[in-house]
Image (cartoon, rainbow, N blue to C red):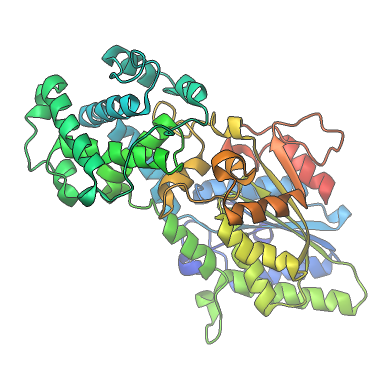
Length: 476
């Protein structure tokens, strides 16, 4: 894969530039060579692909090779260029996901989450908790936590009811009477049922004292309060995933932070920053590429030749494409794209409306097609089996972004605007946009229209799912 011809990819370095990073280095001359190849072979269709964020350089090259094998065809006058654009912070994210498995497996974490489950389950009136109003039994919790998808049946039985009966106040912890009751309840419960390790935990324990957490009971109460408020505000991601999101946030935020997500988003914008006053490898690779593409388009149009450009973005690659579309709109008027294909997009809904939809309104691209999972499938795509039991998009929404339940474009539960998501203006706008274009919900392998098929049941599989790739090829 490291021997993949450079005319099929551009490897992005630090700050979105051509800076040398990793084992493979792209330079401005390599981009020039791409367009020389296009010109020499009179190629009239160009596919541009951005992989997702959870990708190492090695996997990015593998994805680029797959795109080359599937879409590049000189006889059909078609070429593909893949942007290998994120090999730094998201490698840290990948490592952090592994670390979470270790953190979640510690005795301390296990016991903390057990008490949170008891308190939250009781307050939500879970039927399995001895008819509601009582704590779940230890054996029940143990059995559930040893399933790949803990409490999945509970989520189905609760349905949309969620926290409808909660008498919680909408105050912050400092002023909340409800929180004070939770803290007292937590202390009593731990005193009665806590292990020797948890009841005699030294106050200098760095996991607990960080950020002012002085006792396990306080930690449990803070997590339970956050979870119950999310049910009250209808921003939860079901029972166990929400508990895990808030537990990671309250206990391990210093270790995982926002998981490199902000750095990744910043880099996706820097790729298309101005090159004014810059030379050589200090130039921003995306902007350099777009400038050369703009020239190529102008020369072909001046010669009366055809040129069509397709964009494919998987997961966080959709964020990079939103920034590409903004840069094109502002600075490269000759470039027009045919179709934008989003595969399980992890971009925020407001980002797409601001940059993506606006670009289409301004005539920068003609068609849009999104492939993503239907809600039930999304919730069965276990990002971390036994630990976080929904897809990566839910984890992005619940933990990676600044606010909880951030609106993420590829989440079917959100953009279908039913139930608790019906009142969000941005989701209504997105729903209208999607319904005006084309949507493929996986799994669909029998659609009469062969350009509308997909069978990916894992977030990471869309850009190597044969049905999805064939659908894109049929579309272009």
